[in-house]
Image (cartoon, rainbow, N blue to C red):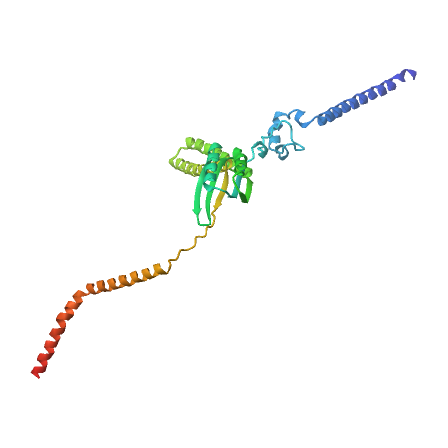
Length: 305
């Protein structure tokens, strides 16, 4: 009886040891999982290769920083407007009264040439009240403020002054993005053109290419125009010089001069009358011939009766 007592005790000790080892393994696995979840997403290991393709097309994997997004799936860089310099179109409108318009025009011409700009249009109007000059100045955007400060020394009085800055960054990004997309599509069509086998396929691809190239040229023209508008600012400058009013009294002739003028006018009238009669001499000749003839004709008729 005593000989069999150790065997149940040994069996119980063996079972307890197995349970202890199993719980220790579970604790180790849970601890490793907790450590893995505590690691930032950028430092976690990549998923196995057999799951990488499925994860790449999962909705969570396509979202940068998503809750299920694995670190093995890299996200494409997203273009941001912060990486592009602000595209600003500056326009100013100025109305100045100047002391000497000609001198002010010479000063403006010198300033614009010195700062690398040009005058796109010029129009001058003169009246008895004032002389006016309208100019449209195109100046590099980097020197817009310098020219504005220099022009501020010209006027005797400022009638109007306004500056507008229009942000076209979004429009610029949109145009450039559309242009890049169309160029990629053009490249694909060119590759398809090389692989076309039949005449029909070649004609269809060439027609698509022609339409696409026209769209690309239009977008490039819009982008060049927008870039030029951003690169050069516009200043509409109106300068005028007020003309002084001078009263000039009319000089009327005295009485003696008026008498002499009247006598001279009467003499000229008589001369004109004589000249008019002289112009009528053919008519007088006709009357002189016709009247005696008519009288002679009447006399013959009376004798016949």
